Length: 114
Length: 114
Image 1 (cartoon, rainbow over the protein chains, first blue to last red):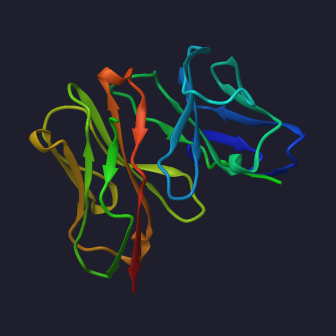
Image 2 (cartoon, rainbow over the protein chains, first blue to last red):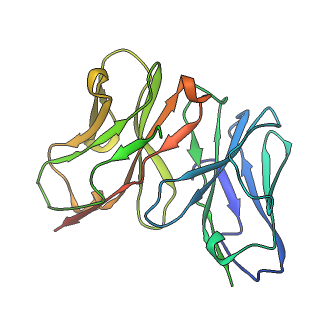
């Protein structure tokens, strides 16, 4: 248990569906992140939130829409995804964003787009 | 493009063999360096980190890493691996001149034969 909880653990969705991934951290951290983990590729940073403000949007397609309503919760809203979006989506949190901080990761949501 | 490179995609060792996994990065200036491990079906966990000070860093489970600034390297070592070390290992860097983002290498899969 890392203190970062992601739900659901597995999700299968059609290309016309709308779904949301949820992340919750119980560590009192001020920064939260979404990463995409695809096979044989480096983890790709998608979004960074610091104190509930988006500070990084790493050229992610608009079919991925993040939301950070408070410092403990982070969502990733999904709509009209493509099969190549199938991957493990990881949420992480850290005390703050930037140097000298350690990230804690959730177990991920395994997303399959059919 | 600036990046984090892990030289080995898949390493196979017998128990009690020594391990060294290479990691090089291409960012100048101040960096923080990390090794994370992902055991099968589990979340990413921090093995060790370097922020400043002694370039030889000791982590959990007998792992250590050495920061060699002149070589832009942060190689991971363990003198004697166990079957339970079978996992995927990720090197990651936070670079001050990259806005403090945590950037990952592509990972090295380690298989330890009993």
